[in-house]
Length: 136
Image (cartoon, rainbow, N blue to C red; front, side):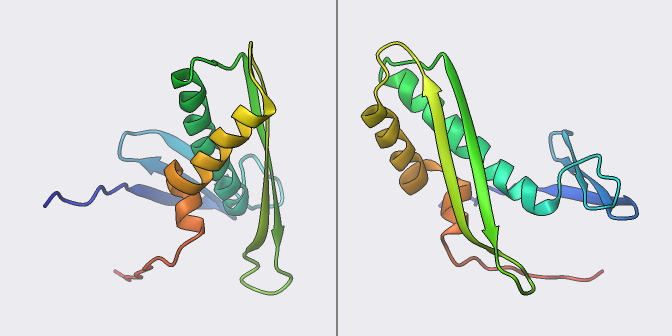
């Protein structure tokens, strides 16, 4: 049996509502919910994680199907509950792409494959997860 794949992120408070996250590989993510925002909010970061996860899948799927994309972007819109914890209740993901020989049907199939089979962020959002809190 193989060990579970673990990812880590260390987040440090920078003051006000501004934080920097550093991954195990040393890459940084600025999270900012202060009045003078210079980074994305935590909920915006979640939308970005979903969009980039599915984008990775779709670019690879289309390349393997010999229909590489020449342009691609994703627009993600999240609707939040009105009461705390104000979680997302609905997320709409729009895939806008072009490429030689690309059809709407092929892009739609790739998007469904990503959202239903490959994208770990989408799978996490659609599942019950164990969240363990420790205070040190």
